[in-house]
Image (tube, rainbow, N blue to C red; front, side, top):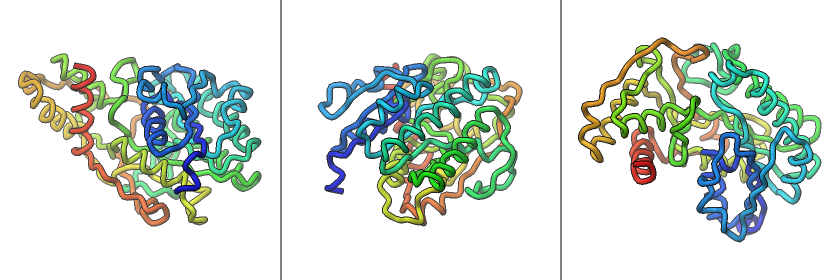
Length: 327
C-alpha cells in the first residue's frame, strides 16, 4: 500500500451519496482525491469534511462534456466512476437525459481514462441489469431483459467497459450495486431512495407509502460494504479479478415490510411516537422487479470481499446518522 500513498483517485459524482463517502474514505487513506460533479443530484454539503483538505480538489463539471472529462482525468492514477442519473422512474419519465448522462457521459469518461492511461477504471454498475431474470440469487453471468431505460443504460456501460478492456487495454471493473443505503443519502426529491425517504417520513410522523403489498424483497447494502468493494476493485493485483463485473451487496434479502418494521423499531428509541405511525400501501411501480438477492461468491473468491455490515447493523448506523443530522 505504501507505493499508493500519494496516488490520485478521480471520483466522478463525488458530491453524491456514494461518491462523497468514497472521497472521504480515500482522503483518510492518504490519497489525493479529485471530485468531478455538476451538482445535478449531488450536494456541496456532502463534501464539508473534504473541501478544506490539502489533498482534495473539486472540479465542477459535467461528464457530458468531453473536455471537462479530459481535464478531470489529467494526472489521475485511478478513476472511480459514480456519476450517473439514477432512478428507474426518472428514466421512464425522461429516457433521453438518462441516456445522455449514463451512456454518452460514461463513454466520454472511458475515452478520457484511456487517453490519460489511468491504471484502472472502476465504475458503478447496477443490479437493474438483471432485468426480468427470475433466478435467485443473482449470479453475474446470468441476466435477463432490462425493464427500464435506466437498466438499459447500465447494461450498455458494461458492454462499453468490456470493449475498452479488450480493444484498448484499459483495466475496468464494474460493481453492480444492490440498493445501497447509509449516511449522506438524500431523503428529499421526487426520486429519493426508499430508506432515507421512509426515515424522514417517520421522523415527521408521516405515513410512508409502500408500492405494492410490501412483500417485494431487496438486498439492502450498507455504504461501508460498497466502499470496501471499490477499494478492493481499485487495488486488486489478481489478474483474474479485472475486466469483469461483480455484485456489490450483502448476499441477504429483506422485504419492504421487514424494512419498515426495522425502521420503526430503531427510530422509536429516539422518538416513542413513531411507534404509532402507520404505513400505507399503493400500486406496484412500473419497472420494479419483485425480488432481488445477490450471490457475492465471485467477489469473495476473486477480490477477498467480506461485507462487514448486515442490513440491520447498517440500518442502525444510518438511522443514528439521520437523527443526528436531520432531526
